[in-house]
Image 1 (tube, rainbow, N blue to C red):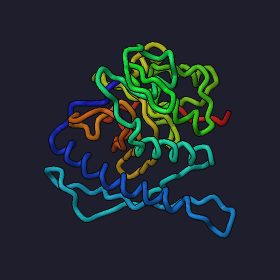
Image 2 (image 1 turned 60 degrees about the vertical axis):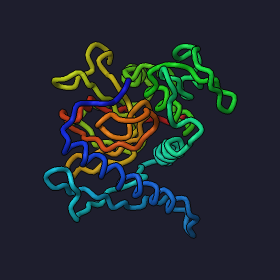
Image 3 (image 1 turned 30 degrees about the horizontal axis):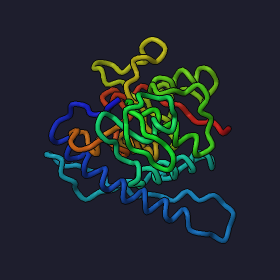
Image 4 (image 1 turned 90 degrees about the vertical axis):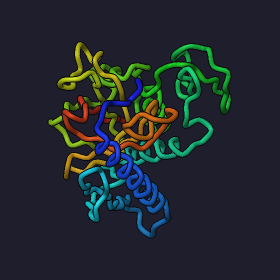
Length: 255
C-alpha cells in the first residue's frame, strides 16, 4: 500500500531533513563496514544522526549516536545491505504507471500482468508492492519467506506460522533487518483480524531509543511524508510510536 500519511508542514520539513542526513550517514557506515579489516570481528560502525529540530522544521546543531548496520547477526547486516543496494538501483527502484514494479514481477503471480517493462529477465507486474519489496530483500539476504505473500499483514500471519518472530510495538526494541508493520487507518494502530488491518511494511535499518526514531527503507512509498513525486524505494524517517502508526515488528530467521 502507499505509505503517504497526513502530516503537518513542520513534520514534513523535519522528515525531509532527517531523511537526507540519515541517507548520507547510512551509506557512509555501510561503506566503512565493507572495507577489509585485520581482524575477523564483525564490525558495527556507529552512525551520527542529525536529530534536533527547531520550530518550523529547521534543523539545529545537534546529533545522537546510534548503531547503524547494527545488527546482532550477519543475517540482519545482509538485509540492511541488500535494502540499501535496492534503494540505489536505478534499474528498478522506481515504479511506473499503474503500480507497475519489478518486485511484484519477481514474485509472479503477484498482481496483474499489464506492464510492458522487463528487467533482468523479470517482467514487471502491477500491484501494491511494499510487501513484495520486503520479502524480496529478505529472500536475497538469506531469510525465510515461506507463507509471506503480497499483503503487508502476511508478515504477521507468516510469523505466527513459524516464519520469523512477531513483536508488538512497545514490547520490543526494533533491530535492523526487522520488518516494521504500519496501520494507516486512524486511531490506535492495530492488526485487526489476523493482520488484515496492516496497510504497509518496510525494512528497519536503524533505531534510536532517543525519541523512538526509526530509519527504514521501504518500497511503494514516496521520498517524504508530504507524498509528492513518483513512488519507489526510499529511505524514510519514522517513529516507533502510536502516532507513527507502527503496529509491530517481525524479526527475520535464516533459511
